[in-house]
Amino acid sequence: MKTIIEHIVESLNEQNEIVTATIVHKSGSAPREAGAKMVIRKDSSIEGTIGGGTLEAMAMQLAPQKFKTKQCSIEDIELTDDDARAAGMVCGGEVSVLLEYIDALDIHQLNIYHTAKELKASETDFVMITNISQANRRVSGKNKWICTETDLYGEDDKEIQSIVRELRENFYHIKFHLHVGKNRYMIEPFYTTERLYIIGAGHVSSQIAALTKTLGFYTVIVDDREAFANKGRFPTADEVHVVSSTYENLQQTMHIPKNSYIVIVTRGVDKVVLEQALHMKAKYIGMIGSKTKRNYVYNQLLGEGFAQKDLDAVCCPIGVSINAQTPEEIAISIAAELIKARRS
Image (cartoon, rainbow, N blue to C red; front, side, top):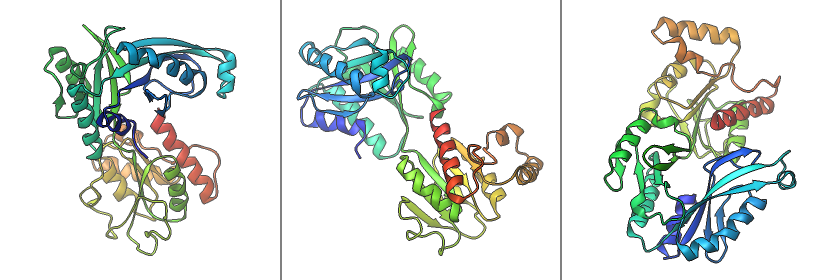
């Protein structure tokens, strides 16, 4: 499935101008959060979604004006209680949507989005910064920048340099927001596909993998037993790896990227795996087991120099508490906790 960046680049490559609609703020109920984005073409076809129903219909009604004026604007769209109920919500609210005209002939715009596509392809996390300080004007490619953890793409600008320094202080935990300084900027994080590493390939793992693939996680299975870690048992997994029985040097063997999700469900080497996971700057670490087992493992790690705050970030016992007993129920509880970590 193509990403929204790929759809934008595809349209620009074909010299088709487009309008993007991005939720920049919401109050009350709304089907999507700030940062949700859709592409509107001149023939009224769309890619992506900002929530469907009245919200998308209004954005599409306003798009022709943007194609005509070649300008951007922030539109406040009010959802009535009837609109909300039609979308499965209890009450209405107000949503602010940035409608941005993107010119296929703007070489700076084309370069920025091509850079974004290349970074996505190389699984490099990045943040797109757009100057939206003046409504009802044209946003050119010179008003956009891309920053990674080490590089910055776009025109030289002192205020952007300052913003980038702030972003890099907490680079892997940036959320969509509007930055207000001398100018007003839309800050959009684009992190790589969310990777889930399930360490251990037992019965619970097979049930977890079946769920997480449908939730959009790039799912990787790791175990030391080829009889368990194979595509026959994990047909939906993106990768299946057999490692040494000691489970040592997982980072060097697997090249687990920062901000990954790690589920530890081994058959007796959880401490060895958790010790390595704590060094990986993961977004989520969950370990199966009782509170007694957790306390035993944690005490060992504290004795080896780990800080309590590091251990407090680990979800153990793993999963949302739903009194789960079967592998299927446990998998559902773990999947729910993964969703919670993703959305928190």
